[in-house]
Structure formats: C-alpha cells, structure tokens
Amino acid sequence: MNDQKPLMRRAYVVAPLNIIAAGAILTGLIVGSGFLIPLVVAFLVTNVLEAIIERLQRLGLPLAFALPLAVISVLLALAGIVLVFVGQVDDFMAAWPRYLARLESLSRSLLAGLGEDTVARLQRQLGELNLTARLSSAIGSAGTVLVNFLLVILYAGFLLAERGRIYRRLIYLGSMRTSPSHARRTLDNIREGIRQYLFVKTVVSVATGAISYAVLAAIGLDFAAIWAIITFLLNYIPSIGSTIAVVLPALLALLQFETLEPFLVIVGVLAIVQFVIGNVIEPTLMGRSLNLSPFTIVVALMFWGAVWGIAGAFLAVPITAALVILCRELQHWRWVTILLSNEDHAAVPPTPDDATGPGAPGSNTAPPSPT
Image (cartoon, rainbow, N blue to C red; front, side, top):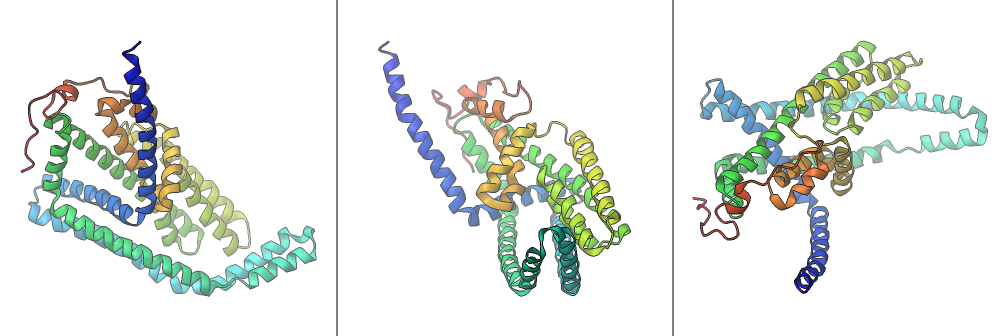
C-alpha cells in the first residue's frame, strides 16, 4: 500500500502537466501556423523530390542531372497550373454578367411561390453584389498564397541541400533513446509511408482530373481545364474533397445551361468516377502503406482543418500517418497506433532496441556522434 502512494502522487503531478503540454502544443500550432504550414509543405515537397531523384538515378542518371531535372519538372508543373488560372481571369469576368442573369432567373422560378416581396429583396441583394470587392479580397488571398509558395520553395531548397545532414541528425536524436538501427528504421518507415501515399494520391488525382476534364469538355462546360485542376487538388482532401469536386462544376452547369441535362450528367458521371477511383482503385494501389482507419482520417481532417484551415485539410493524412508510424516504433506510445490504426493488432511487439539501445535508460553506451 505504501509503495502505491508515490505512484499516485506522481500521477497527480504528471496528468496536469500533460494537459498543460497538450494545450501549449495546440496553441503553438495555431499561433505559429504562418511559419509551420510552409515548413510542413516544404518537407512533403522535399520528400517527393527525393523520391523522383531516386527513381531517376535508378534509370542511370547521375545525381548532378537527376536533381535539377526533378526540380525543373515540379516547377514547370506548378507554373502550368498558375498560367491556366491567370489565363481564364478575363473569360470569367466576361461570363459573370451572364451567370448573374441566369441566377436571377432561377431565383424567380424557385421563389415564385414565396411572394413578390421575397423575390424583389433577393434581386436587390444580387444587384448589390460587389464583384470588385470580392476580386480584391481574392487578390489579397492570392498574395498570401504567393508569399507562402515562395517560403515553401525557400525551405525546400535548403532541405534539399542539407537532406543528408538532416537525416543523420534525426537518427542521432532518435538514438539518444534507442539504438541507431531502430531510429533509422523508424525514420525510413515514416519517409516510405508518406512517399507511397503521395505517389498513389498524385497518380489517382491526375487520373481523376483528366477524366473530369474529358467529361466537362465534352459537355461544353466553361473553364473545364480549371475544374480539372481544382478536382486534382481537392482529391488530396479525403472524402469531402471528392464531393466538392462534383458539386462545384455541377452548380456552374445550372448557371451556364438552360436545361437540367448537363447538370444531371455531370453529377452522375463524376460521382461514379469519384466512387470507383476513391473506393476501388485507390485502396488497391494504396494497400496498407498508411493503415489508417476511415474514422481516424475523418477526425484528422476535422482537427487539422480546424487548426490550420484548408491547408490543414490537405496535410491531415500525411501528418497523421507520420504520427502513427512514429508511435508504433515507440514502446510507451503504441497505444496511439492501436487507436488510430485500421488493424486491431496494429501495435508492434516491444523490441530489444526499445530498452537496450545506445542512449536508453540504464545503458552505458553513448549514442553515435552526428558527424
């Protein structure tokens, strides 16, 4: 009984400290979002670039050619996306009055039974819609995105230049609590899991965007290329992104066409495409690389979306996957993996490295030097 009192006193002290630490971490994530979001994106971009570089090297290209080729390819893809959006601004401004007139017509038809006062009030509100102010706000947001984009490029450049040193330093830090081999295995598992996710997600997103473009262009929907790019980007947001990618072009079809057939075709065909790719093809290609339960993905999406907004929704799955892999390799945090994983037996049995590696408690062996 006396032996349990120190443990109880320790629990009373540790629990409040854990709560305070969790609150401090959450506050830091919110307050430091302007710095952390570009940094996390830069880590992911660097991971993708490293994967491309390794594939090019396997094809026989030396590093001196593989590195600039990978960087130039990614920059050209991003530049192409920006040019598509910029090139459609004038067309959108020209089509806006037509969309507004169609919206007023649809509103009169839908609200005819609500009385003339309601219809008149809605028309007055639509007429007061200040597109210039909306565009100014959008331009301001675009400026913020541009600054973050430049920060991502800056961070990614330094991470690429020091990727070997950073890798060795992370192994050294991990080896303070376990063996270097265990730390290296943990880091490699995180990198490979995220790479596999990003590779599969990019492939299926490109396929989804291409099919969406073919469908929308065949129907004659305005800005089919932009909708294809938006579909490609939204596909990185689990569940919600695919729904938005169907709803937005379908709503535009209601404003562009006089009949409901294009709207119904877009909803039907794109919904089938999203369902087949998201529920059949993608899980087959993804396999068990991430091993996240659907409930975990939804909760992660809501949490990171609340903390970091739209950027958090895009980053939710990679961040959660890295957390699950890391906790799986740490003996005292495997319960997190059990809760978040898609498998009941997700926890990895304790390994000798957990307790007897260099730098572990009770070990007289010092961790290796980072140099």
